[in-house]
Length: 272
Ligand SMILES: [Zn+2]
Image (cartoon, rainbow, N blue to C red; front, side):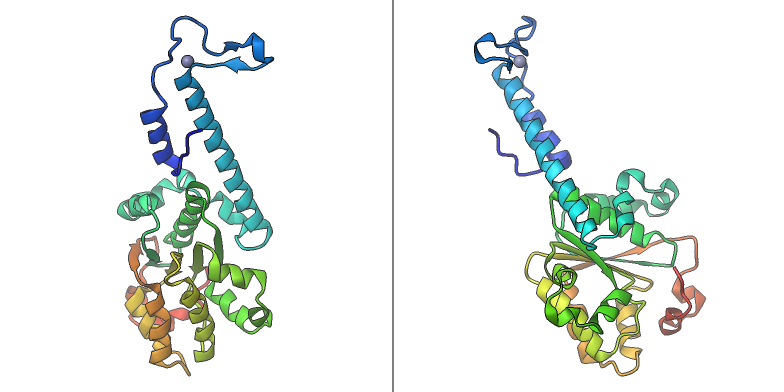
């Protein structure tokens, strides 16, 4: 049985390289006919049998991944609506405005963390969720998602210390999406919780995608300006996102620096 370590487009390519040899019984009509001596099974020539087995393996693998993904949704680790976020169904007008970003995200192989920043309505969250779905189904990665708001509300609950399932998932799933990382009023001790998550992820081959209205430099300044937050805590936190690729998503709305020039003031009344 062929062992196929890769999936998606790469697997289809491999199949075509190694298992797409010509049918040895081509033209004879023998391939795929009933093999009377072993019951109801059909017999196939070697290339055809390998090809069928490889396809069946891929189908099994894909079904397992879909089940795992559904389990993550059922467990509240992934939002139900994320299921509908796929590159296949992304809005063409959003993709057109972000042609290079989408090409990058579609081709992302998990080598670095991603920060998608831009105005509200630019499609950051949607694009980030497309990557999440791709990682779950094409790579077979464990995935989970949260937001800046949710991190803070959880840090006020007892879930954190008790090692609740979702908090543990944020620390350990191969991919974590933190939506609207900048839209929460962190305090220094709450940054500790964010750092706790990112600490556990760093150096363990885990990847994190964050979305925000501002780029990393803007986010750094924004966090440093929040009352009671000190720069050392901010540095300790954001450093854990390296290696990071920052990607600016264009949108219909104006960018924050055109609105106010002050990232700090952008944090209020900014409904999704
Ligand atoms: Zn054949």
